Length: 362
Image (cartoon, rainbow, N blue to C red; front, side):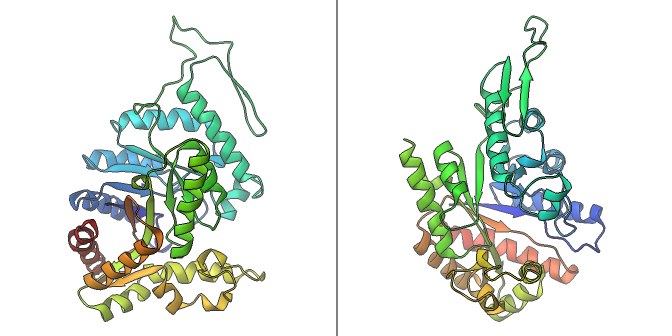
């Protein structure tokens, strides 16, 4: 089992953005030093807590500060961008990275972002599928191109001159393209069905309960086999929110008082502003759970894995008993309150990499 790290990111809006980005870059360097195999960066445009709008720019700087760790977009929100622009800039970044680029294609789920770009939430999944089809066509075929879709029309026919090297779209360094992943956040996920059919690798969210994570693989595996593909659990990534300390009681207190617990309090509070029942369904192990049951004790018992090394290993073994094997465990990263909190998070990361993961691999 490999281990990676994912920043959405989640930063205090009162903190200067430049400081946030510097701390995130510091974390990338630390992750490489501690043997993490990959690092993922989210994309958001109107969310001050999650404040990286262009993961590719962040990756460009992180590449110059690292040597081996793979860097990925999580996700590239395809409905927000013209697919030809996505295809050309990601191909360029793959060459710039010398093939260290991973990709995740997704819809984007922040409603203010969708409003900003004039996207109907009911159409964003279809937009993502169409954009991905265009991008893959541009990467795997040669011009001339013609694509008349529901959302985008792509044409490159009139000005194709191979002798002059005009009208030629650059292909990625990794052939036929960088590894592509897809995010999973629900039971019977339509995204997992599509990913299984296409051969994209699944990434299960840190927000969902263990039984939903297990269902992600079942849906993905079934779709892959029906499409004539052989699914490999080594390609499956599972994200979890984990805090490790030398003392169990300290771990529980800090896991909830830190920005890790703050993230679940924040997201739960946003969902509580809605009036419809079942608004917190993404968190629930049992869909019939009351929304009010998604509280501190539930999150600490289900979504947030915390404790000393022995307890964290026990919780992760319990998760793997439910889900079956997966290839990479993705550690979620959160903001630091102060110097003391930063030291506690760095200690947690050290214990995770140096003590938890070797035991998981055994």
